[in-house]
Length: 202
Image (cartoon, rainbow, N blue to C red; front, side, top):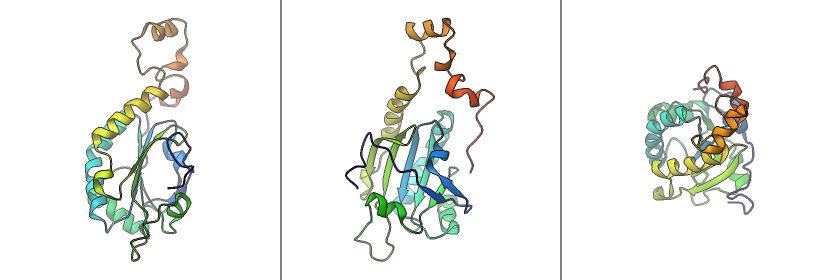
């Protein structure tokens, strides 16, 4: 991993095709929410499938928690990455990096695999603005985060980015009574959600 990519730094705003061959930028998929970004070898890797299978029920929690979930693989086509997505029953956006842009830019080429030329699997937990909160190196399967790990990370990320995370404090009640609604859901930065959050493209 590049030395300047670490906790507290900003992940590059990669733009890649998704499983429908539509170009997607990470910042657009994230919006103003926390995000879990998983990087994978691809369709051929059983470790990737096991990780993704574990994320399928977790994705439902992300939906109600206003948290984006995105996966990127080094598959070579929309068809391949969609086969991976459908094979595990995933509902969140899958992108593919045929040109290995991420592997080169982040310096995470899996140089020991001379056949598939994948990237080393990683999981990023991101604060809004693609700011890195936690990085997990998943070259070995146990290096990948459990759902419990992600839950703990996202609790802290949400505490940092949602002013009303602890809504029951005297300070927050006083802000509400003063009419400072911008710090509360669904006002202020949450305004676009006032009529209900639109589901992410699947």
